[in-house]
Length: 303
Ligand SMILES: Nc1ncnc2c1ncn2[C@@H]1O[C@H](COP(=O)(O)OP(=O)(O)O)[C@@H](O)[C@H]1O
Ligand SMILES: [Mg+2]
Image (tube, rainbow, N blue to C red; front, side, top):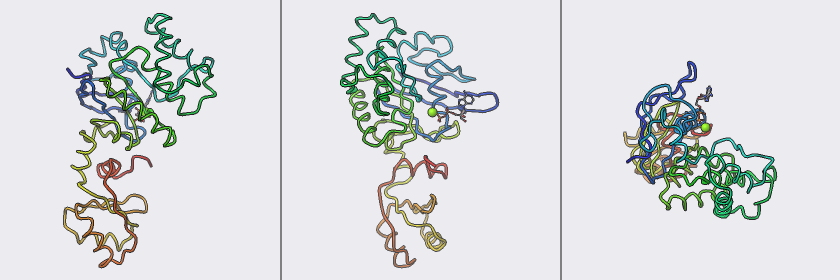
């Protein structure tokens, strides 16, 4: 059975279509990512799955249960780390976890045990009795994740779990999430960081303006849309004119001041750019999901 099935799911806020007829299936035990820029409709989709925001139309089933009629049962099986840090500032790390456990009818003793385990798993031992204000951004995010595990959920929903963190703090979280993946839990993750989606997700959808533009394994999407490599060079009329000489298997997009050329023949294109077009500075790198997004939308994920 699939963990989540959405068909023609639509969400409107008055006249604004936030999620526009999307369909997707999330398998049990996979890590499934929604990659897209701010405003794409990721959080709105998560809120419908969590049964806290009603869908406008379409079907949405979580663990085989309809979100419109089985909210209580669904919520028991979900763990949620929201995009906004909504920890209780008057409580310590440990107390935040125990207080949250009350929503799930977990006994005091059991809650304390689970809180200890979660604190250890997310490496917050030294902060157990610290108030929230004194935690770093990365620690707050780790506590949100620890809290989402307290009811031993079948499905974890992580809405931008590393937003705003520096690379080191982000990597620490990725390591722990990779461990969770091996435990068979279904993880649904939203992000606008393409590295995060590539690193953690088995499959992703690329979302923009409420719509799903494509879906697949990160590596498959890169292969399908771009093939091998990206050559980057400064944009100019001369470069664009020169590039038009190449055949169809060499495509380019302009991103800011640069031209990104996707090609399976990087050496050949590089040497032509240099010898025939007089371009001196070029670099070549593997294609990424950011390049896929640029190709699909003409824009970057992060503006
Ligand atoms: N409660 C709301 N009321 C009205 N519009 C909303 C509300 N929540 C989100 N939106 C709008 O819906 C669109 C999708 O937002 P959201 O789901 O938060 O996107 P994302 O999480 O991908 O950044 C945006 O245009 C946003 O402004
Ligand atoms: Mg969001």
